[in-house]
Image (cartoon, rainbow, N blue to C red; front, side):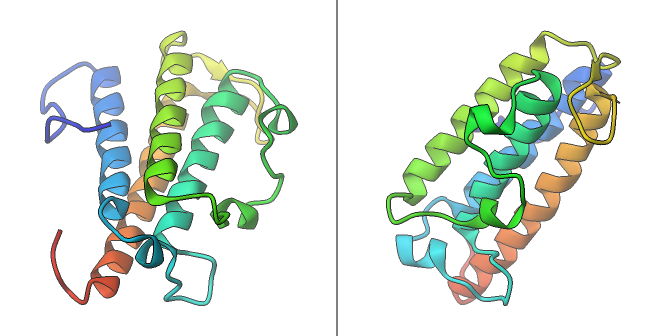
Length: 164
């Protein structure tokens, strides 16, 4: 899910939204990539927030907004929890690479789902009611940017100030 750098400075709205979303997705992945298994699982705050947990949660968020809200699948069908806290959890089988691979696959599926909709089309399968694809893109950029920032700070603390 690598991006070619900065999103387009001048482009159609949809192109810019998709590039910003992909850029933010890539920033989150890069904050986790290269950490050891122990480092990625390390808890430095009282919450369940860990680098690996942030990536697991991001996959959940992608599924909620694209697979469920937009495509109309159910959480049960996708094996997703109803509550948010469990989405930060991982198993012994979850590795940095497997979690990155899973997240990148979920994002690819989200792109495929979104491709069938216009920015003004409504996602009708959300507890808040109908929301446009434009709103979903903006919300995901906001959420993933926040979590990428969390992951960057955790990474810096874990690596003792070393840069990537």
